[in-house]
Image 1 (cartoon, rainbow, N blue to C red):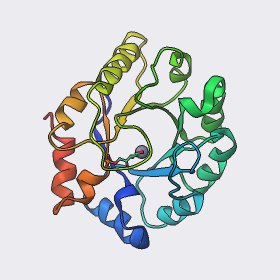
Image 2: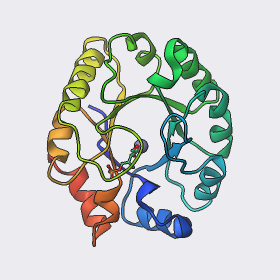
Image 3: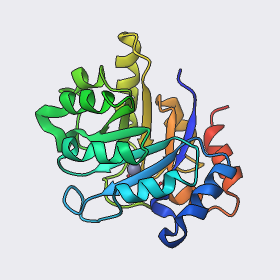
Image 4: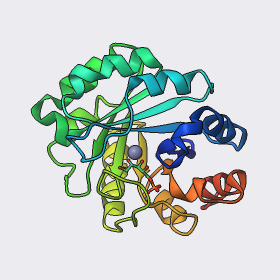
Length: 220
Ligand code: DX5
Ligand code: ZN
């Protein structure tokens, strides 16, 4: 089993005070910083681009987990890698038949590559790409905004991935993103997830350090 990590999403931070927000997350025990890049095409909203990743990079030594909700990720990935991303995750829906090529391309830069699947995207058809990726990101809400409720049926997809990886002797990370709370974190971990993304749950907490710890230790 991979190490359990908590990756707070800066989508829920005050964008006008991002440096301080990231420093605070590091002080509060975050394992990774999850950065949600939305391009206005793959999803309706636009958040930020690689300049934000470079700016955040100057405020933390934590790994930057960059979730690209973008079309044409093959063209855009390098920019985010040069800006300081440690993990670059692309959506299977945005890559289509090029998914494996995109994963391979990202890994040529020496960073980790993730594959994200939206709630209605099945894993069948992408297994050959997952074998080459470092991480699977199971979206537990429809991508596009924070603060939504976790869609329970997505847990089965994490379980399916856990079984596939175990059956093939593959040590991959499984990340889940969307609607994770202190209440459902144990079930999320039980499904095989080892990286828990949390936006609202962390940022709305009066005690971020305690919340991050509770998410990590939910199943302990
Ligand atoms: C949604 C984003 C998530 C989001 C999670 O498209 O990918 O990372 O910020 O936020 P919460 O934890 O509030 O659902
Ligand atoms: Zn995300």
